[in-house]
Amino acid sequence: MSDPLVSVVTPVFNTGEFIEQTIRSVLAQTYRNFEYIICNNHSTDASGEIAARYAALDSRIRIVQPPQFLPQAQNFNFALQKISPESRYTKMILADDWLFPNCLQEMVACADSSAAIGFVSSYRLIETEGDGFGLPVDKKAVDGRTIARINLLQNVHLFGTPSTVMYASDVVRSRAPRFYPEDRFYSDTDAAFQILVERDFGFVHQILSFTRYQAGSITHNVDKFSTRQIDRVLSLHYYGQIFLTPEEFERTMSKAWRVYYEKIGSQWLLDRIGKVQPGFWDFHEKRLSAIGMTIDRKRLAIGAATAAARAAGSPGEAIKHFVQQRRPREQP
Image: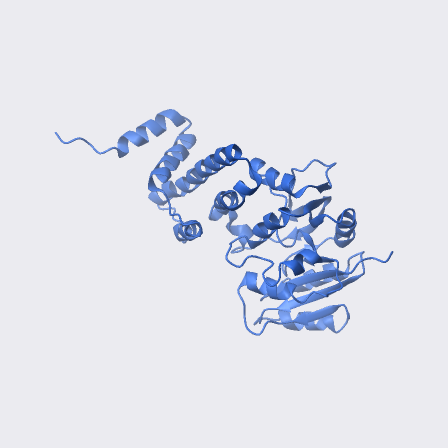
């Protein structure tokens, strides 16, 4: 049996500093039956020229471009619509990341083990740190509902980034033209949950991709803007009632809110001493508005008190003191 065709897709916008390494990592794959679609989103640096130079050397590379500049998720979706109708799998690799040489080989082998698998993930390297751990090493093909529950109940994130996973191309085509939801911050996480409703999950217990850590990137902003905490709240809001029992949902959601408000409460305390994080509160108001909510000032106060107590080492007394200080004083 011949190796199935894989569509490798790289959306590009002004990543001339890194795009060559990305392209070379794709061309160095031990798995050879792939097409490589590079979608140049009207870059103003040398990205397009670098891609064109490689396309002239390898016929598997095809360069496409949207009619006009597109926001990230829209550009990703435009690129995915260009995959060959003959491809069985689709592998995204972002233009500042790269793949280890055995990435496609291992992921195709995993995906081929079951027609029910909708996408495959693996461990990844974020600069010098491994990520994506938490699934038992004997688990390689897992029911989609089970994986969604592991994520929601145990907060174990196995999906990584678009560069980490490989999708079944029939799944990509079935969700066209909006494979990635265009109204969500972590659109790839939403896509993963939506796929898991109907399809299974494959996992390769090897590090197969490299994620670059850049100032201003989503990875860089994870801790600065407390994105992990708000993303967990939103994932539970959107998908908790699909995959969890009512009791599990209520318990897990309640804890997620407590953790979230303690985290942003820490920033509220930092603001008081002049360590302001520009854009922090606008970011959270915007994320919460997507589910029709705003920052709850009472919960924020409790979260700040909890954060202060944890820092001080005496949670009970600090919270009690904080609440007493906030109570209106009775008039004499």
